Amino acid sequence: MEKLLINGGIPLNGTISCSGAKNAALPMIAATILSDESIVLKNLPYLQDITTMFELLGSMGCEILLNENMDFTISTNNIKEKEARYELVKTMRASILVLGPLVAKYGEAKIALPGGCAIGSRPVNYHLDALEQLGAKISLKNGYIEASAKKLVGAKIKFDGVTVTGTENIMMAACLAEGITELTNVAREPEIIDLAEFLNEMGAKIEGAGSDKIVIEGVNKLSGTEHSIPADRIEAGTYLAAAAVTKGKITINGINPNRLKKVIDKLKEAGAIVNTNENSISLEMLRDKPKPVDITTAPFPEFPTDMQAQFSVINSIADGVSNIYETVFENRFMHVQELNRMGCNININGNQATIEGVDRLYGAEVMATDLRASASLILAGLCAEGETKVDRIYHIDRGYERIEEKLNYLGANIIRLPS
Image 1 (tube, rainbow, N blue to C red):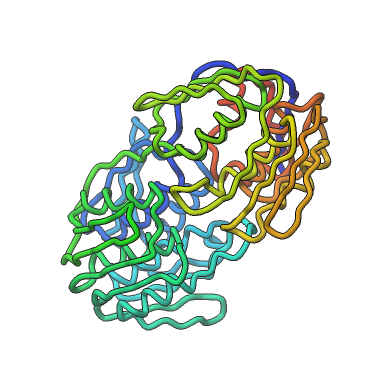
Image 2: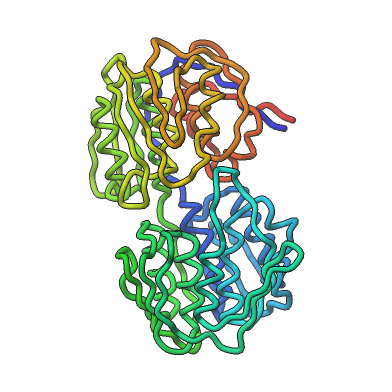
């Protein structure tokens, strides 16, 4: 397996542009199944998860073309297979997003139960219960979800728990359902708004995205459109954290700071100087050591669970003690054991991590366990004394576009080692 070799202790300085958001792109790719016409998607990030989703659509009979501007044209009107096979689904939970569109458009779907990062329970029962309320028949057989419906019919659905992919899946399915669907206790992440805007461009009638209630009036068909993927707020937050731990000074262009408000607030609390305008964020860390900051993760608009691991590194070199409470996933402290091997002083008690800041971190050989854990190990390596080798970096390639290239452009010293 490929590894990243990091020589730490170098402040990051410079300007980079934010890549397109994986978490916005994946549901939009799935949503193309609903259209009777070709869809053009721009600013797609070059990531393993995007490649996997394209492979999944290709296996169903979709046609995907790339032009010289790196825009993708997706034609889904020749779908023959309504099945997402296990070998494609096992590495990526977002593959479940084709379920709703397939049932809504073609009346049937067979989807392998999804895999992905092992960061805790992310049950698909929210998706299945809601689809049943729309009139689908659901069964689980041999590790597959089998769903069918002659015609989905609008309903009033309240999710038992807040689910991003569940909200997206049912919102897509309801676009072609008969009548009106009301979804409550929905996710409010910016990516929900992005998907609703994309679907409305295709001819859907969706209102309320970004609030706790979404109303969808079903239509007979959806048409083609051209759409640009918005910037990745978690990628931007990760690079801001990297600058903070290396006592650097960077600017990230192409990102709406309103989507990172809680992260920016915590970076300021840690002592960073953060300036924003409509489409960029700048950070400078002048303090020798960050201030410790307490964090509680929660669904948007609160502090994102996807930034918890990165702030574990900031707090690990802070001047004092901090606590991080993880309320979204029950198994998202797997990076802690590896960070402690680099000199961090982190203790776990249930969903709470207590972090006592140390004077310095030391390079070590460490192993990534999931996507954001990978990011935290890279951040630790950037500020550590000596050499850090991060193994199992296929996790990082699922969610960060050319991460070592961007960090090296900012002055880091990172080498990708071959398998």
